[in-house]
Image (cartoon, rainbow, N blue to C red):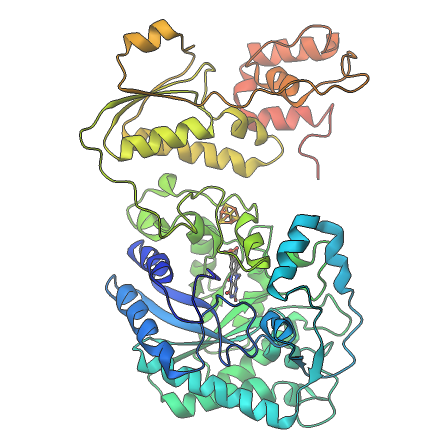
Length: 544
Ligand SMILES: Cc1cc2nc3c(=O)[nH]c(=O)nc-3n(C[C@H](O)[C@H](O)[C@H](O)COP(=O)(O)O)c2cc1C
Ligand code: SF4
């Protein structure tokens, strides 16, 4: 997955550290992020890996050795980014497309969901230039095929295990496969067979140059029918069979949406629903005799289910391994409770839109591979953390894992603070709180809930260091009507629903007060799933 930390297309220490961390964590097969076969031509970002000259081989070899040392395999995702070649736009080259005019998409629709700061950051890659497009000539296509094959030879020379040919996500090979984008009338368009020709030629050329012992994966959209006449699941399955016949060893079934605005990106390639592409993988699986890789918010239990009933042969995890590189080892150790969950917040991939390295809302180390690792504490000390919200819990965990003795004090009778409250609308935040609590227990943190920290009691604990993580303090906004009885702030709501603090009787009507008193007496307010269910009856929390 794009880390965007290469320099002039060359592998850097940060890139090696990122993939090595995931191999150390137990991943069986890693796919190096989208890499440009004819860099800088057809490249989507300046800091992506290049595969376009022999100078890239030593870096790839170093990367491969680091990954192989922990027993993982590594294939490189090879790509020509076609109409999404931002570097071509920046350097005043047209982006290659199968045919012109382009289908009727609205490239400006993305602006509706994007802030001005984000738009400015995005336009930095292209220097604010708008893309221009050129219909690929047959000579262009022949050169592209040669570039893929040359790239594969370099990957093989570096000792890596194979190539993943990217034929999805709106890039060049995908646009040739898509009837919505490919309106050619020569031998690269017009019929299903012709639209698949470029992909077939690439796979055959790689196989011819690299021989039978080199793995070729093909990443395909299991669907992209956002535009009329796009790729349907059945068409994708037929393309997968063609790719396998051409020599592909496995098909990796992703998805895409050719529209940029609205839900486009969360339809594909970044799904928001669990197992969003599962059926697409099953459809392909029924059509081919080579292994099928399923992807798309597949969490461990679902992965086991899909493998067990033959829906796919391998499970790929993207964001889950950004959030927790140790996920495979945790599962192998029988400790799924210690897997730090991805909360599906899309923070990581947003960075890719302005060519930055992904950061993660739950894994502070992602994107900071150059930063020093937390070291074992010397000498260990007694750290008291005041506040059991996500900030306090994370501070306590890291301190304890470094070897400090840690005592965490929390006023409420449960951990989680605002993250727990926010799980009313965003249940995955509840998973994060559960993981944090499990990680604290594993690290040996002494947690004291229902304990209000005072200077005297903290001093009595004789700490060497105190971390105050009691959360933000917010004023009520100064707007007319803010003091009306039916106007509740977020903090009022939180206090009402969780019973954590006081809300004046005036603010909550008699019915709500009675209902909450009963709920508290029954212990319902300690269970956020039940609070969520009940609250839907009288306010729009958690409704979709
Ligand atoms: C930060 C980030 C970078 C990604 N980079 C790539 C990429 O380089 N090539 C690619 O084919 N998909 C890329 N993807 C998509 C993932 O490979 C994967 O298909 C998608 O995230 C869905 O899987 P998941 O739900 O397990 O994350 C990226 C996703 C993210 C979040
Ligand atoms: S940033 Fe959010 S979506 Fe991305 S890996 Fe981290 S938790 Fe998951």
